[in-house]
Length: 117
Image 1: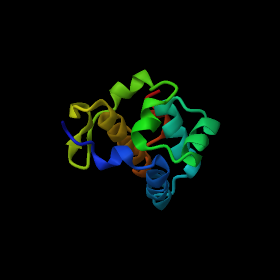
Image 2: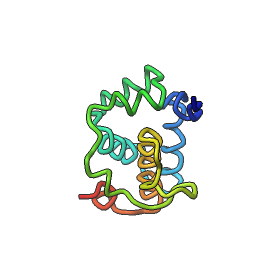
Image 3: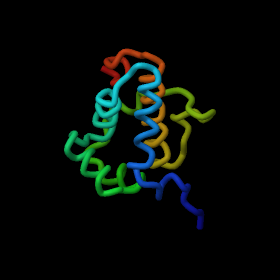
Image 4: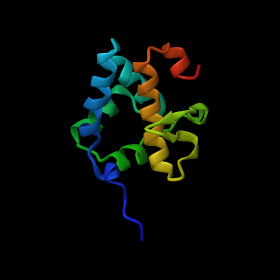
């Protein structure tokens, strides 16, 4: 039996401020981070805030998402030295997709490009 990565049991609310900080340091906004999360997961703003309030762990946050965006398969590239499209574990791949989207936001990429429209 393999042990789960620590991130899976971490409350999403504990990770979320790091996404906000990373974006804000580069002149982006919390609203843009929320938009990226909503695009990826299908949560509406109320649903996202409810998950944050409930201290839902990262794995449950992704597993309970209303509908992962089918366009997320278009997210390619490297995050933390790992190519996102090569990540085997489905939940870890969703986490890496979100990491990559926030990276793109912080790098100043246009929202329509980030949201693969």
